[in-house]
Length: 487
Image 1 (cartoon, rainbow, N blue to C red):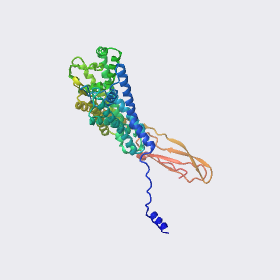
Image 2: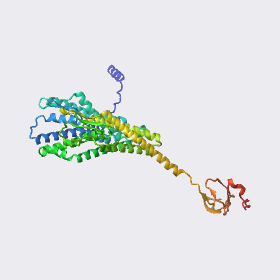
Image 3: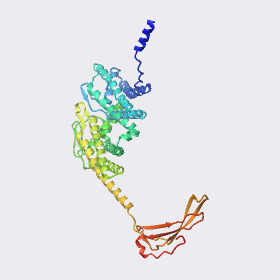
Image 4: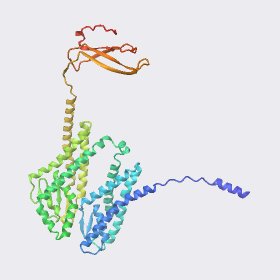
């Protein structure tokens, strides 16, 4: 009996178990986050490995330091400054970084399209940043180990994490914005005016990029002989191919310099300085794409490069004016879009430059580059927006102005009015209505006309209805109306 009582006391003393919490992430979500975190870095590592192996085999070199070279390429793609055999390499090609940013943004955008909540979007963003940082930690360890075999010095850890995290954070943020742009939450939270300036800003930026590309292409054609001589210095197919690939990789850097010159800023390649009003010569690296640098003094024909920022400003102002409700909103949109373009130019100018060993620093004057891009686009865009809004207002006033013309009024009008309702339980009938217009003289369209219609009670038969239309302003001149049968 005592054993039974003890069992009852033990059962009573037990606390009920709390229900189990559902897992923070489902298996499908965990799999998606892992794919976002490591798929793009894994593909990039595979490409770097292929490039290193092909390069070493083509140069008939052994595979010593292969892992260190792969880690160096990982840092170079993310613009982490490197030191190779004591030579500083800070100016790195922009094209691989831009391609990587586009790939990351598209992958994140596809993923967040299926993520309906802000929490899930935040998890995707965090995975897109933390995965590359983990790979960067491994690359730092590999570079430190390979520094004893090859001349690659391990970069500063904090600087490496900052560059890698910054590149992937910006790319992931763009992907989240693009993926959720048309969602109900984004439409509800973002103000309407901010959505109107996206397309004009992107179009104006595209004009700047296309204009700088056109300037570089024209310079290549003008200096083709110099470029051909630099390609011949490659000494063989492999050398020419390497110089060509390097020129393509550094082409966006050169386009940034051309855009800086076109807005009035300056570009520097060591001792060489180029602006719209002066040109200073000096030694340059033997890279074929640098043949676009002028070999003589500045020319007045270079002022034609101002067409690029002028066209971008016109496009921005016209598009903003067409989307805004009035000229004040249009001007605000123009200045905000110009600020975004100016900040983007400043960031690109900073990333495109760097130190290049004995040649010195390759850079554009960053502060003047961003400020001048903003000023040109904002001022020209404001003028274009004001002109577009003024022309649209003048056109609408011309269309809304009434025409002053005399309209003759007919003396007699007869209309048939169908009455679908059933009268006194019978079928629907049609009643003919006769309207007598007393005013025979032409009247202005602005004159008020009053009509009085008196209809007797329906009795199942067709009943005529007399209507008198009287010009209220000329009542004194009207003849007396003869009495009608309905009166």
